[in-house]
Amino acid sequence: MRNTIELVTVEDINNAVTPILNELGELKSYISNLPPKQYYRNKDLKEIYGLSDNTIKDYRDRNIIPYTWIGTIPFYPVNDFNLMLKRNSNFDLINKSA
Image (cartoon, rainbow, N blue to C red; front, side):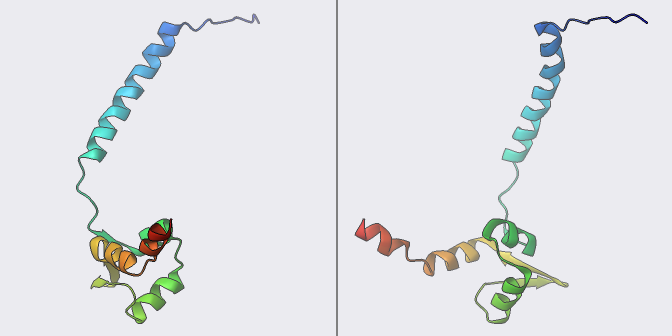
């Protein structure tokens, strides 16, 4: 059995990478044209804000966070949720003292 060495040229690499870069460009274009998210789901609140299932349920039960139901799935309006976060923040106090 004979060992062979295959040389890879820059052109070979460019030929392999160019279609991948084109696909990534198309995906980026597709994603940037998607409408903004209108509602969060539990999964989003856990990923974005680090809330647990129990905390989310507790906040719903105590009407701390705005939500609506579709069937058995709770949805949280993004704009209302962000407004609630802004109203409950102390950022204005911190920015004024700086």
